[in-house]
Image (cartoon, rainbow, N blue to C red):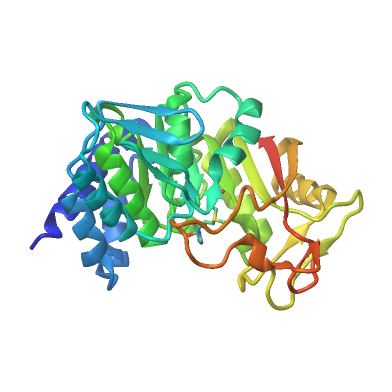
Length: 331
Ligand SMILES: C[S@@+](CC[C@H](N)C(=O)[O-])C[C@H]1O[C@@H](n2cnc3c(N)ncnc32)[C@H](O)[C@@H]1O
């Protein structure tokens, strides 16, 4: 019975989004029907996760996106309120993308995603009034930054239900005026209508190397963009000026699902090959243990466990350690 509330919260978000889409080329997309078909909310942990969504009643009076996403209430939480709030948030462990500061509670996520955002944001075409797609959005952390940067609507998609519920919890606490301007749907990229040309900016960050068919992913991203629109592609790369690609035979940094890590010249060739124009690299950064680490909010293994203990330039399997690049391009 209780988790009906979480359901009705999600339904309000979907209703809001359904009101936005008719003004876009996605007007015929019945995403609610697609969600029903996927039966995503039958996940065994859904009742436990959605219970948290029902319990938490705090709503911010204002919020900020300067590094962490920070929510502020009229009054500070009492020690008892804070203790039970932390317990509720911890039910949604692991918190990977953030950080968040929620009514004084610092959610120190595995990733300092604010560091990635600060590397990308200065290079973006202004997001003002843009319709944005964030493929593999996780819990929607970047979407809140995009809203503060002026985006009209952000649509995130992520197939991992826990991250969708983390987004829902944050959204529930965001002031009503902004709450549904950043919506995360429980979909993989494959659920978005192909060649819809509906978005002004499309982000694909940390997704390409997880896709078995790299060129197909690039081609899908192109199809989501309107003419002249901008793609933001962030992915693992190999350093070097030549055209090479690592296809890890087994694991890469203990991950089973890493398919391709190209050099930048090869990645650019792939992007031009599917039809992107004006491809340019705006950032190359080695991932550090300052940016990705184990915390009280993500207690599983993290970067330091994935690197060779004797040589931090290598993964534990002997591959080059993670270096990530950001490329921008246009349709
Ligand atoms: C490495 S994380 C990157 C998260 C975030 N975009 C970032 O850059 O920090 C990859 C994300 O892609 C999601 N993902 C996995 N398969 C996907 C798919 N088929 N379509 C969209 N997202 C997917 C995962 O659940 C995960 O949240």
